Amino acid sequence: MSPSPYASALMLGICALAVGLGGCATSKPAAAAPSAVHDATAVTPAQPTFVDREKACAAGDKEGCYQLGVSYWEGVGVEKDDSRAAPLFEKACDGDDARGCTNLGILYVQGSGVTRDDGHAALLFDKACTLGASRGCTNLGALYAQGRGVTQDDSRAAKIFEQSCATGEAGACFNLGLFYEKGRGVTADPKRAVELFQKACEGGMDQACNR
Image 1 (cartoon, rainbow, N blue to C red):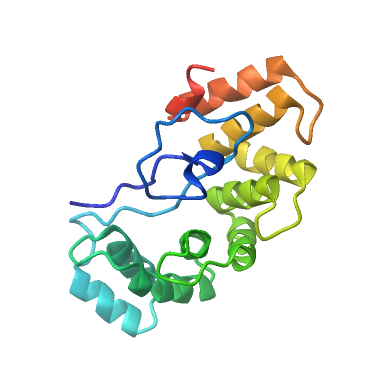
Image 2: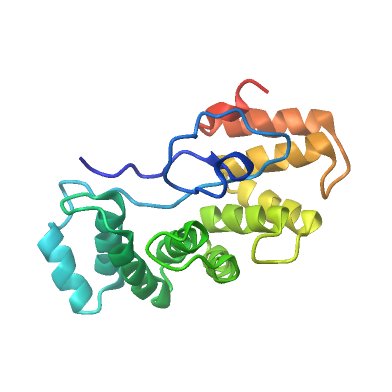
């Protein structure tokens, strides 16, 4: 089975920062509990084999390392092993692959395959966001909203969500909608909140469709 292009958005407040993988993607979110999503590009049959990816990574190809990391993370063609995925994502991230930075940040938030370190995760999400990964931005905003690894700052979180939502990232639009609904980091604006929930719904986020 091939890994899905992107995991469903999970609620940080409900899933205890179980970003990317887990079984609560359909849970109804608590008010203003921001979400975070992971960034895992699908490994399709048209792509190189597992052995090819191993060879490519060993030769210093960051894409090969990223795809190999996804294989270990999702358990595709090999037994799932986050401890082996982490250094592969690190190699990709060191090569300025934003997806690798995002996924490695998630592993640090989860404490899966690495020792949990929210502060390091925030640095990784910040790098991913700077490199243009909207999901990295969404996760960074979620950490600011929760005060995990960074000083809690709703205003900064809202700005980050706004930036990410502008790219069409559904999780960021949903989180920003929650902020406008409750007046967190922004002036409360129910109409704007509804617009953002609609955008998130249209972007494929089921949690936003019934708000």
